[in-house]
Length: 177
Image 1: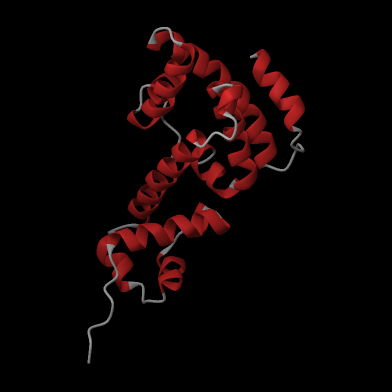
Image 2: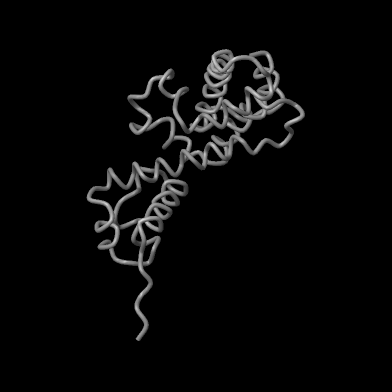
């Protein structure tokens, strides 16, 4: 009889990411992840001593996914910074559970805006912006902070179902920012 397929740590992280994406991070637990993988909870607990560790790994995967999403700009000719800002807001619309996990959970807590802007994960975004506008990295960081705070406000309101998405108005506001 052939051996059963082995459940890897990466498979467990992917399943936890999918749980967060579909229903929200608060539903990441050994049982929901095991159900997603069609296995017992034993492999989940073997690879992760605590659910908190699993949530941190799923958060890291969501963070990478978010960065890739931001950089997939539909109309780069309109401007990299505008594209990143609009993608940030679109992410909140299309992936509200992941948006809340990334930016409105305790996993984001404890990081200051200045620490966030120096994070390794943000380097590709800042590099693309610097290529588009020129200038020093410090100037690009200042521009990023302005756009981030503005876009985050819109995205947070939209992700929590308090505002309808009107791209023309939001685009005009981001261009002014």
